[in-house]
Length: 352
Image (cartoon, rainbow, N blue to C red):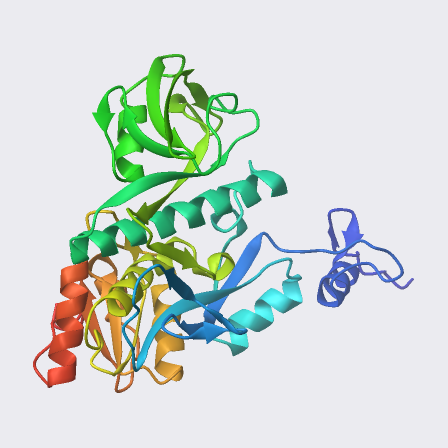
């Protein structure tokens, strides 16, 4: 009598059938797709922040004379692919330089699409505000805090409005969003604080009971997103929010400085870079540094400005003829560009 070979099964499905379904990406004739809980990251496009995209300046400055610029100050990006089948993920891993990362590093599992949208918007606004403050402080210009948006169900919903200018918190004068945030976070949820503001040129004051941050119940929440602008008639507008994010902060700051100061900050060279920016001019590390260096190299950049705390990872990338400089502050970034354009030594990641 002929003996039948036992079928190998996975989850109640014959393994051969399951493998075929995974390669196909789903069950034929149905809407069912098998996707992996990973995202693929690779080099993304670069954009010159000194120029225009789709006919609109990446950074637009109103109310001040803008100095002519030359060369490039490229912001770099990382391409992200999600909703991949097993076959697609394996293909990216085998035939490209993409890296696979857990999907929750890109899209937190505890956030809805709407919460993620609001979180990204708040992150973009905060990054732009920090870029403006850092640039103005570098130039020796004063700034003020502008309310960008007020959460509908937030603590300040009935007290503050978009376009209000926050002048003080509990009697302490403020000129930057981080100062407001620090004073709020010195309180506890449920505590009261007094916000002094200007609305349509008129002073006002509101006592607000702080709410709770839904991501951390121990953190007090005012319920507003804030931006920053120079005092007087000067306004800085960023027109690339959806791509920039926090990692474009340093490059945004440098572009503002270049537009508002005489001469060419980059020496007319093709410069690219990445890094978050704090209001005091500190440059912070970012994710995807290897892919951003690769993207800048392939885009023709001569000099790449990398956050000092990303140097260990950055020094392992084949940058070709492009010099990868290590920077910890805006001053470092300006000094690196000056040295490079003059042909002087530059502090590089490789040297560390």
